[in-house]
Length: 253
Length: 283
Image (cartoon, rainbow over the protein chains, first blue to last red):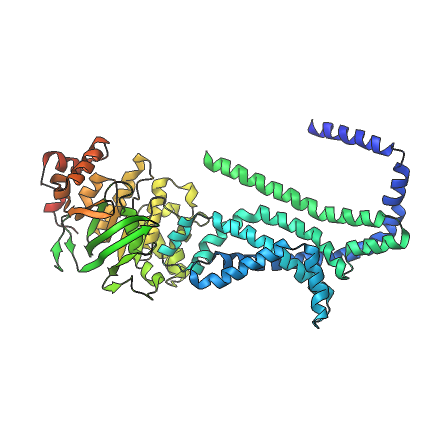
């Protein structure tokens, strides 16, 4: 029934849009198969850089985010400087517009005489921005593990780091997968930001194709590619959340 | 003093724990106001008293889960409250079991038990596992080895928690109201485990609301009231002839709530001095 009603609504909306007076021109400049076919191989090739950025950044973000979260969770006066450093890092990189971080690293650091590898600086910018977000996700996960778990581990003679490694973090990680994937969807899209410092990835390639033809279709193609990557992730998050909900219901009975 | 017989009939050994002038505060609230207590090897000491009297806090101070405000704790002749001492090394010698079991939910029963032997004592995986299995067998839990904690009943979880503490071969076992969270019909199976441990000579400090059990098992009972040990002595005297009005009041309240049970009621109501444990020597 839901399928029928959905199709019905889509059909009506489609009919209205197609019969609007400007539809022909929109179709010509945004959904032109000729330009799509011409731009596709180049955009598809450039999209490989987005995927590469996204995959490399994801792995690095998982590691750096966890390190920062652990630094923030360390107890005792001895670790105050480490905690302080972690707090400043998160505040700065979560608070700055991503576009600014990309510019500062991609243009500022090479100006200081460091090698001008825009892909590397772009990757580093994404890792620094998203590690700040992800460290907060980890920290929420770590803090959601009841202190009695740590007390039980410590009372058996495990050190603070052993308790983290074997008891607290494994439980935290299980709980944070949905919010973590949420941040990764953001990361996937934001790989387009590195185009600003000269990396020719899918968005930049789409822009170049547009500039050569004054037809917007290449930009639309780029957008579709991003959706193809992010929508399955969104559905996967929904599935995980639903599975978790069902499990909780099952143990509560 | 090194070889005496406790009220339970067990032969007590040398001094195992000495607690001297222990004070503990949470903010402005003083929870322990100068506790002195000496426990000997193979001795079972039960702490009784109302909720908030400081029983749990005292146990948590003994294995340094809570830092002391002042006072000393000496375990087997070593002052564990001395500055610069390696707390992790002390804790592996003192087992504690909590009211809420605190099993690790992401690990199977056997992994719960072998975690500390493997990571702290560096026992090999096979050896740790075979020791865990023999402990589980001893307490009738061997079939649960590969189960996860959420599949077990409360009583089974608490027995696993006891086994987990025993796997570190502690010199001293602290039990913090370990039956308080259990359904009434599951209490007995856990108390049976503790009885067996007492018979095998384990030194224990037990915070409990189970007066009948305390009367059966303890060599000595300490009544705590507002952070102090108000009265201590063998169960026959504490239950049969309490000296302090506050102790009497507390026991009266326990009887009225129907939670006394067993020998303790008998002692308290009829001043009976005969206890089964007193005539038969312990194993």
